Length: 640
Image (cartoon, rainbow, N blue to C red; front, side, top):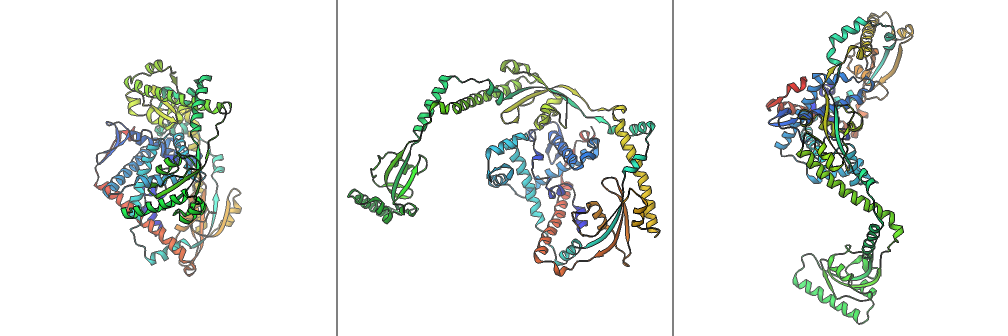
């Protein structure tokens, strides 16, 4: 039952379930995500275009995921297949369908919820608190601005909100829960013989004719992807900072300004007596409060002790217990009416009653503390750093603004901007769509370099902020289209493939012969393990679904094996993820005692089952949306 549900969950829904729709740093680098040429698109979904930039980004993201999953077994040639390209584009289409459906249903992600999600992300926190500078820097390191990240996160949250609303609408019966728990907790006693591929690889031989024949039959797999060599201008705040010199007179003036500023940051200590007014108090209540305040003020003028009166009369319980003392405070700490009076009184003077939103205050300043001003030499380094940073930032923004203007107005050359702004035109190494050295490491560069505007129209790119305060403007200098690799360049790779195919075929024949002997009762796994020195026998005993100590492929095959009513052994034979041949036996089944399953476990399983049911419904929604949508696919883009 559970496996049948899982088998039906495909497409973008499956990606959402495993978290691949949610925005992570693997999805960063979408500087051109919102762009794309109006005349060049990968697909149209109900008149909404999916740009070629979005499509190329999707290809790179999926390639990176596959490389991370497959490791050394990753074969880049699979990225050029039409099946791979179509799968990526279909996923983008399904995402757009879901976004449109969410909009039709009136779903939305509020700014406050979006901010809360970002603030709660530990990646953006320092000491458990959201750190805006860390947020900007981390995004910039991955080639993304906050606005673009927030746009992509909002889209992902919207899709998840739609799917969640569907996923929570299902009904799970007690019978389904019991059946699912029965399967989940069932134990299966297994044993398996592993026949390694490596010894067979050592024995096979591959001729030059076989290599040539394979190359001829599969030449489309052996291509060098298109590459570009770029000319670019680079503007960096760090570089500008190195060019700036601050003279002594400037530092002295900065010190005098800073000294005046610090001297103005005095702190005052005051105490008060508050006659509180309730919110929305009427004229009668306010008049009574004012009269009470005046009476207290008169007592103070007659020599009453301020602290004693505060303790007895003040409606501010926090300070009343301290004789009205509020401690030291700076400007901006108190409400304006209170602050204005407190910073105008001489120490020891008592104010008239002062009206504020809280009521009437009688204030006495008890002490004034000026902020200590460090000496010039003590502040020299900090003043120099600030002045250098300020001037560098001003130069950076001025040059960046002019750079943007010049490279836009003269789109077919970088030279005018280089001459006017005294910037060097640099040349990159060759860069493919999957990246390269130097500036080829930045996703914004890849998005721009292979866009229609820059690659096909040969225009300058827009300014690309690849890191904080680090801008590039580029253009294509040379373009090398996709081209077939010569046989001599790929012969070693082909030799390995052919050898692996031949060895795998021979191992499969050998394994099937052993399986026939087992089925005929002529031998056992234990006996076969003794016959073959390179085979290994594993007897893990009773396993359950999800046991971490068992190869998941072997466990999955074990739980798909039917069990015979007479309790006899059932067998399976297959190739595992390493290419080894597995002879598997199911030797027994242990049914669980559902009475021993606690209520918490039942409820947790119910929630998981509900999610699976809902996922099937969500996938059905995608299929329904696709059937009712006008979808246009740029087939040429997939075939190229």
